[in-house]
Image (tube, rainbow, N blue to C red; front, side):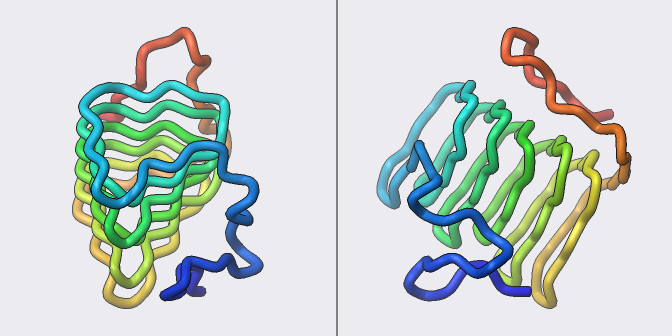
Length: 137
């Protein structure tokens, strides 16, 4: 399974670019937490937690240092932090994730890097927007 191509078009397993409401572009650095009910794509750098009920894509140039709580997550860049999803976590061949994960399903492509503990839970839920970001222990 390969979701990202060189021109960032979607495959059948990814959300369409028109469905992404928020983009942190390449060359943009953000220091702070993001709380959203929308889909998010990160091609720049974020230092802070991401909490959304939507889907998150970390592009090949994307770097996130912080915890992520989302509906699902695709990692083609670098994530350093804990992850909670109610759906799928995919680490692509260019992706790296260092942290503990609690997910419904986990896919790691050849070349993808995962360092941490994983817990697969069909009953995992994304915390309500008013709650602080969850930390997986």
